[in-house]
Image (tube, rainbow, N blue to C red):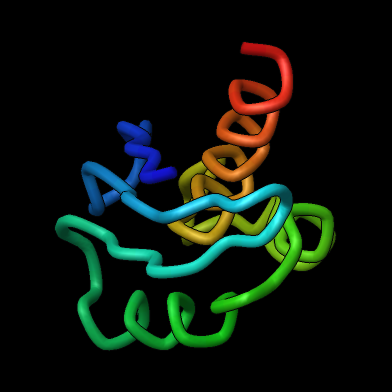
Length: 86
C-alpha cells in the first residue's frame, strides 16, 4: 500500500513510500536535500518500521527540533498504525 505523509518543520514537504506489513520500500521525498534523501531512502529500503524508528527517530537538523530522517520515522509509524488499526 502506498502511503503519503506531509512533513512538518523540514525542507522536504512530503514523503511517499510503500508499506507491506511492517516492511518499508520505495521511499521518495519531495523537496529537501536531494542526494542525502536519496541516500536515506536507499538505506531504509526493505527495513522494518521498528528498525527505522530506532535508527532515525529524534535526529535533529541544525537548530530545528526535527529532520527529514525524524519525519520519516514519524511517517512510517503513522502508516503502520493506520494499516493495522484502520
